[in-house]
Amino acid sequence: MRRPKDSLPPPPELPNFTIESDEDELRPVEERHAGTGLVRHDVHLDDGRLDQDAARVVRRLEKAGFQAYLVGGCVRDLLLDKNPKDFDIATSARPEDVRQLFRNCRVIGRRFRLAHVLFGGGKIVEVATFRRKPQDATDDVVDETDDLLIRNDNVFGEAHEDALRRDFTINALFYDLERHQVLDWCGGMDDIRGRVIRTIGDPTVRFREDPVRILRAVKFASRLDIGISPEVYESMVDNRDELARAARPRIFEEISRLLRGGAAHRSMWLLWESGGMGVLLPELSAFLDDDEGTSGAGSRFYKRMSAIDYVTKTRGAPDDLATWCALLAEPLSEYTTGVRDPQTAALEFLDLVVERVAMPRRIADGVRRVMAVLPKLSQGRLGRLARTELAKPAVDTLELDLIARGKSTEMVEALRSELGTFTPAPPVYRDRPPPRRPSRR
Image (cartoon, rainbow, N blue to C red; front, side, top):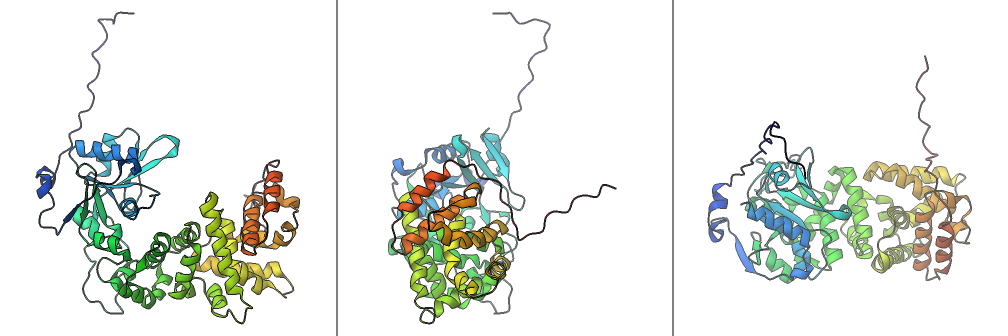
């Protein structure tokens, strides 16, 4: 072992980070949220069902003097005896504080910064700083002409403010990991016990602030198999036209989540019955309204939705392209049957959907092409499709179609085996003009 040279300079001093706690965090835990209307419920969630990486993040934040809780969907799902998809954390620490505590952390977001703590295998634990509602938000009686749409939700706040800004009571529960307590500012525990969805505050205000909450209510009611309170459902119906004001990419993503969440049948029925489908997908809604005139196509549609649910629960959600094919198959077939140019008619139909819900062109073009080749595919012939990246979602679409019609899916397994011998080529969107080449002048 070599001896260090005396002539070398001393090592540099490492930076010493000092993280200050606010007055609320220095108070005894029992008094931390005094005067905020908090109700503490002693609930010992099974440690074996908790995500251990998320638990480590919470404990390190608490050890550093910050408040930190499991929050939202993971608490709700565990209380309802469901398996959470993600474990999110809410904390008093700012994103920069979280980054100082965790070397495996990155801060993301422009409008509102979030800390992502990274673990092996691409796993991410999301850590959000407590937020509060914007200053101009109100729960007072509002006029029909008032514009309540939230455009700025980027203000740090306290734990109780973070709970009160959320959409539904069952999503506003915090879990104190060390003390085995559920922190409840909104009456969410009563609604968990009653298995009912209620908004935090006036449902009309909540839905007009963010119309996507209507789709979220449909999603939670369907996926969790719980009810919607009468006043909330009535407000969903009354405010369905507000969905036209929501950010279109969010609409597409929420509809996709309804399809892939394992409860597509009930989700689409609720969306249709509440009138939301008539705003977002009026072609499909009108088709379902006229079940008698379409020779029972509504029944066929819901069998396709049940097929999606069956596959999702059996081996995981099908490709998004396949679920959108199943969603639009019936009205698209009616729109293109008997016309001189079915491909052009399909483009016209899908352009309306693209405009209304911001369906990515990749999905729209895929739906058109997959539905065009489905008759040939149902005969067990892949043809040139096998060498494209549409092959797998096309086979998924065929499987959903066969299940919906009560047919054997042996052909699907044979086609999947055949696909294993091909390398897909990159997609080509034939309905779009080629990019212009730069001038060589």
